[in-house]
Length: 472
Figure 1 (tube, rainbow, N blue to C red):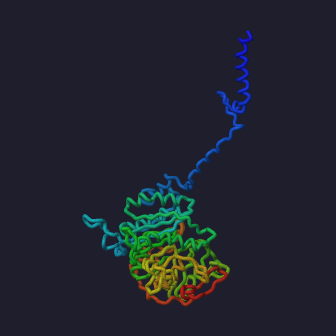
Figure 2: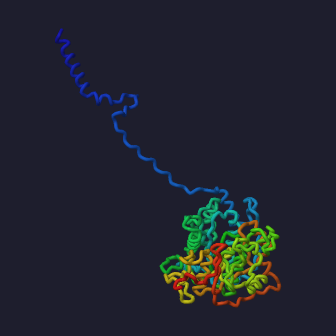
Figure 3: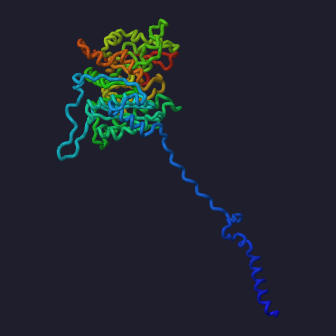
């Protein structure tokens, strides 16, 4: 009987001793249906979740962007009220006046050979930001101008940045449509911000140069592009303006007929006041806008006098101390100035490609193998806008035939643009007259000795026109 219980007792003792010595392992065994005990188990570090790719914010739906695109490509098929926009109606331009602007030799391919090099005769450049309401009118005008001049001879370069109204979406959505039309379209989104701490003028100068970069690239000797840029290429650099096709064509026409280096129109704003200084200010009277940039030829003064308190009450007294400019302005005939921009300019590519008309280098004299560029003021130079500095550098490089064409009038909104055309006239209002005759300009080869520096309204001084130029 004892033998009967001896063997099981020995086996039970062995099992008990084994479980006792390996109790740390047994306690961590997982029973079916019971969550594991991690008190003695080091958990593996979880892999960090991948960061989602940062998407650019969208401010306009694809459907709405397509409506804008359609209104630009087919302006007659979509009513502007559908976009909530007023309509600046543009008259038909006079083809006989502008037919000479069309290139005589078409850009075609030779039979059974590789395509010939295409010469760009007209290069359109723009920097746009939050310009959505203006896009239908502005871009329709540009495309109609390109269609008249010939798409194969034209290129369009637009730089956009930091828009929050859908400008980017519309400009991006234009690509396929413009490609179908055979228009070379360079669209760039730039991170450059004029509101950055680095300064507004340096940023604006950089943005203008970015808009011209496709032209610089095509003109480079190392370029493999089939597109050719020559000194005779005409550049149209436009702001966010309400414009008509005959505005652009007239500027091109006048630059060619006057043999000018740069021409501009007149730009206006409704700042309030009639500008005669008698105190009967009327908000309905437009005033000249680009007074910070524009300077007369006779004395290098601003187009109207701005007192130290910054009042524009004398804005109506334009060219008060330049009788030649005033007389020609009143007859709506072009007149020479030291500098202007006034919403949009037309100039030749020559100064940008070599900048050596008078043997001096580019960027106002720098001999760096390139021509004039947009820039900010140098150390010791008057704080001024990049367009005025651009004109200053043109003069220094020997390109001083700069003129205002007063039959061309711009504003910066659809509503006011329409009012300006009614107040100042369309181009055809003037050149369409039976007794209209284009007058030439007796060009002055020397700039004024001094030009007004208006860094602040309360600190206006006259300085040598070429102050801070290299070698001065």
